[in-house]
Length: 72
Image 1 (cartoon, rainbow, N blue to C red):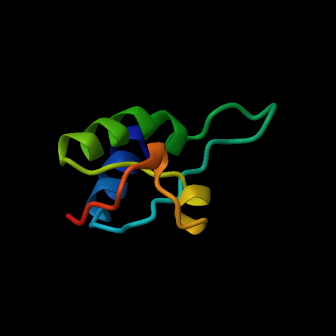
Image 2: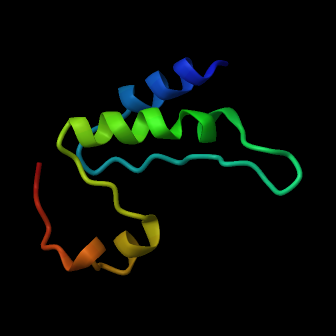
Image 3: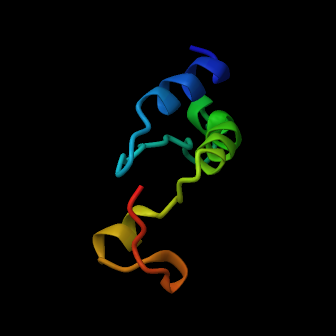
């Protein structure tokens, strides 16, 4: 697996309402490939006009920054 393949895999799965699980590593092990691909994934998500909301906010029914839901 490469950083580029990890980013492509995540972006291929990206549909409205998708939840992407990203592994960032653990203390002492350093970042894993998903974490290294994260900047590319974030840029692509935003370029598609989508928002990123953390899972806790989603589960609590709130919106990041107090925004109202937008359907895409």
